[in-house]
Length: 446
Length: 167
Image (cartoon, rainbow over all chains, first blue to last red; front, side):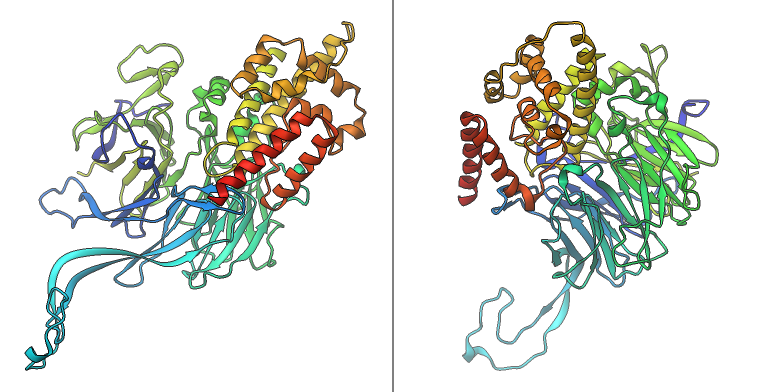
């Protein structure tokens, strides 16, 4: 069930960002990708703790067949490596997640997190500066008092656009374990952060306190069987959030029920199929990402081999299951050996919730059209054809390839993987990260 | 089936071991998954061993050999297992078989610690930062009862970490 009939999709490569070297520095590996709420800005985070924000240019009237390009808007160092002296542990500067706040004024705000600390960044533009001070020259030197004979009011003069990023809040020391998720609440005042065993609720204005709302740490750590792997607030109901676990279940919690939401309101769990049980069943059932639909009616979970769409009204089983790369089911042992089985893939919804997307190996990504019940495998590569040309769809076959745009399972490159993806909130533009490159694909407009 | 189980078990142990040296501290999720996989493989392997041993003679346990395995580098550990399948692993299995159920679940699981070196997470990830110090202390206590060379290893590892911290 792969691809359209004619092997062409309606997606085309728009841009590629990043160096084309074969030798990739560890620090340059992208670890987070996120569009803001308008889609005008696209943020990426990397393992070196840096954030690069791209801005979409104003729509060009000359090129109606494609959306405007994204260009670098701001680059800043969000997190630095730290050392926890008490525990003798190094804290990586790698950016785990970026989440934008809805825009309230001219400035843009985003939350970025590494393993231990969340930061609120303000990104603002400066295109004027005051000139005509009485006591100082333009270069900052103080004027000699005897040369002061007149008094004037400084005026704002235009200057070259400068984009400044400044840390407004640092939310630290609230997580014993590694932070895997942050999610801004629809109330625009609070947000949650989740680590392996706890979920904390913060108010954006207060950095010295957070409320623990979920705690699954057992009294005896030897009895630990499950960790939290992903968490998100409901897009519309500010009292509702979900968290996914390493056992493949998702719990929905209502903060009105109690202060500590250890008792879930709903448990979304699909009974395991005993016929597919193997040594690796636990690992591949671990939820790597959970995302609500824009409507708030559905929720999508990603585990190692599948994408599942759940109706929030039905806990017993998902309403839709999509095989991302089912051909890997027989390769789990090798994937365990090379650690790929632990890869955590993200997933995302299209703007109108009719399509969903997730990444795979060999720089493939998978598009699923829920309405048409069709899926496509596309490739993110420099050779994806010229910008503007529709991408060809691929097919992975068990044996050796027979046709063009087919590839055998054993030829897949597992070092080239697409873990991080983001979909523009309104338009059909997707951004995804290969190891160190950012790819932007657009739907062909006609 | 048990050959694969043993391979996965050895693989899991070496992965758990290499987790300790990874930047960023022990990953709880990863160690949990590795421990679970290792345990599942070990259970299959032991079940197969039990069936096999029911037909074979008893092997005399030789405990002093175990610490030598632990002091070797991690890449060698799976090789060791592969090359000498009948020796230490069998004795460890025997040791485990002879433990009564209550002892097996006690904190002083000597049979198990021999299988998995002290400084590895035993069963599930136990690297709780609050309890880590207690855990290390209790490891030291346990090795007091056992082998002195293991104690030295643990203490050395602990001290080295502190030294780095002080810099």
